[in-house]
Image 1 (cartoon, rainbow, N blue to C red):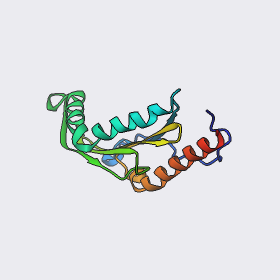
Image 2: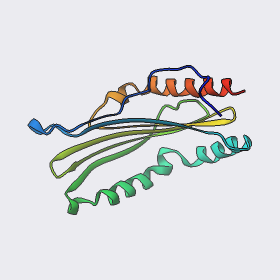
Image 3: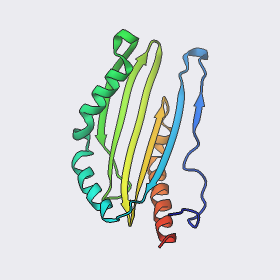
Image 4: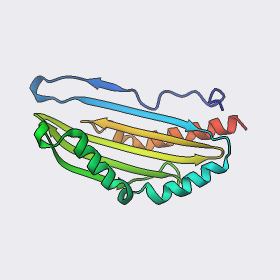
Length: 164
């Protein structure tokens, strides 16, 4: 399965990391990652998404994210204070896909942490697409999320069409 025949587009987003502590500024990081999975048996796609639709919901994954972030950040004893964790069902790349969003606010020692993350998975013919948007102390990608989702969906659809 190749995406070589699909339209060549600019990257969905550029990864940016900046460390600027003058005047109390915080770490800023942005990341967009996408991938394609093509199982040997295309029937696995629908069966897999049928199972995902049952569990990949905000209510289904909220306890996992809450405990994972609380434990991995070490709690207040480590100098990290989590003020809020919100897991939500968000707009999907495609209607038959799955998607969740995570927004976390915390303070690590004196550094504010505002994390936004989106995870999307969707079927496209014999393939499945996955998109992860994550940014720290920024809203650039969150504001552009609809365009990023559409670009990822279009690229996968073009790749599937080119490989028929």
